[in-house]
Length: 352
Image (cartoon, rainbow, N blue to C red; front, side, top):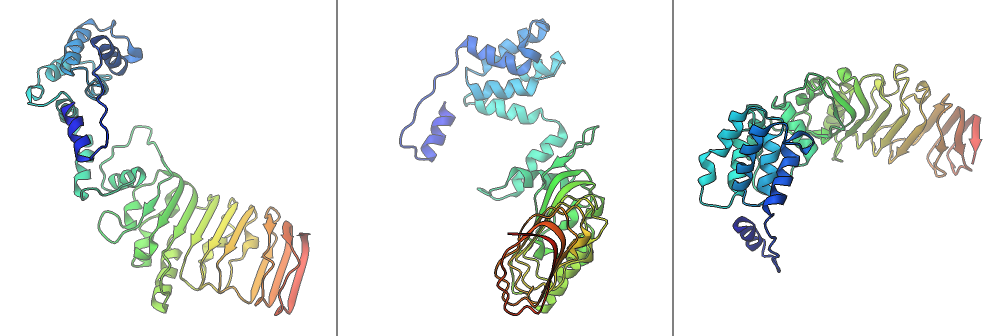
């Protein structure tokens, strides 16, 4: 309770509500549920006797009880229980919470201690998301894979310039699964570094997001970003692709490669320097397409043989000179306002 009171004082709480301690009966009930399978301690009478003494040392404090119960779950060696019961850490001059927390760390497996200690490299009050922390720990080789090689789903990754957060850290993460979003790609120095991410071998990624921060877009930066995206080609079973704020003047050839026969969703957004679109007609499974903020697409727009593609074309295409929409029966074409157009082909498309 003293620890909780100190926290409340530091946070300058307007009102402090003192929670009572758990009764001996409730303390034992909580511990039993956490430390024994199905909450049944009767099958292990020797451990039951030791655990009741450990519960007494927790002094009715729920956090201490939960910490100890979780620590001892599935531990069948009575000597380990006795070591915890007789530890001198309980004799520290404080309430039972801090000794319980210290004991839980002391008895962690070595690889989990390293994971815990890894957090100490970040400055005080640093905000770190759960997914990013997991990725960083994986990149440092701190996480042990289970025998089943569990795959990590939705691994967001913010690319940094410093060691430990570079895109090359993805190289060994072959079991990433689901959605992978790479942001801050302007921090990738060259195409060679991008290639180290080895996205081609990430077989379980269904959706990929590539995002740059909008920059000045000079020629050198454009060339670099083109080299980078060329080398970020994913595996060909991809179902969704999103490219945002790419600063190059052309999309890579892999974006509309016929080998990406399962690609259903494509978003090209704020790629203002690109002067042409990839050949979308080669993506036979494409159903969902967003093209937005593409200032460089001024002269030609051709979408051919995308039978599953649905949606609407924008009405305002003032600078467009050529428009070809062929074999897209579910794509709705409204009354266009395209004063500069001199070549128009619309076959087998819907009318809005």
